[in-house]
Length: 389
Picture 1: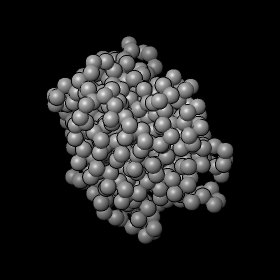
Picture 2: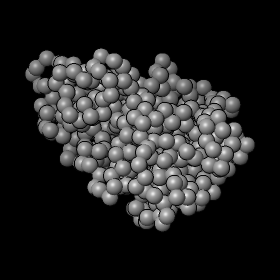
Picture 3: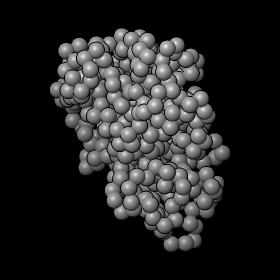
Picture 4: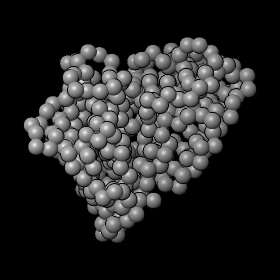
């Protein structure tokens, strides 16, 4: 619903708030950089920590006015909604268990939400949040940042155009090694990710498996029907999985395999995607993101580069710098923010969101939590095939 008295037609950058992500939090810094890269957002308010003292300290360090620094997200949502020039959008960059309640406070006041993934820490909460988002006039954007990479957009465009023909195989993996030992209690990033009360039932499946799952669906355009999963917690005493092997059956007959691990020693951020159809195949790796390998059946493998010959409009519209210059993680995040901005600015002007604007939605977030839930259910039944619901 529209907020009476708020000037949504105000010119200039989108007024942004942030929940979580204080100056001592890695992901908060990433979101702030991403929001600034294209100059479409201005951070003006925040509830940056669950501790009032740290919230104030972080807010002042980031140059926020003291009266726009809040000790709780609810207080922030209520007050900002009443201000004529209050925030138009909020970035939620907290541990998973906070996402639902925080997002709902802003959605019901007509404030657009840009939320970190996974959507929530339980499937029940995910379904509640979907209902809240659908009942609101505000937009809901999920930051699956890898969907913003230019060569991922190129791969998606090629598959949609039929360059690979009917898809047969989807192979995706996301391998890391940073949790190969018991989590250091002083490492906040590791501590909450291995605590099921904060992360949810999924460990590696929730943290990085959802990225792999979302990326495979985003590029291929396929929907999963059933899956079987084998989840392990290799580190003694760990309460969530740190490794998962998942087999996927897609609508239309395609088959897939997903591996995610945070105990694969020697891997830093090994997100890789391979998709094969009747007429050809594509291969992409996040650690070398400006390259996409394309092999038409019966022909030599060819390398497509970001901004290079043979790439199309989908990749070009999310590229910022000339070919041959590295463009990656931060820019991928920035693309999600830029796409969100285009949608929000269209809303400001009372226009439809342009058809070329693409970003992960609350429905994509629900599918991610359904993926975690299905993996846990399957593994508990000795890797039985389960429906994706």
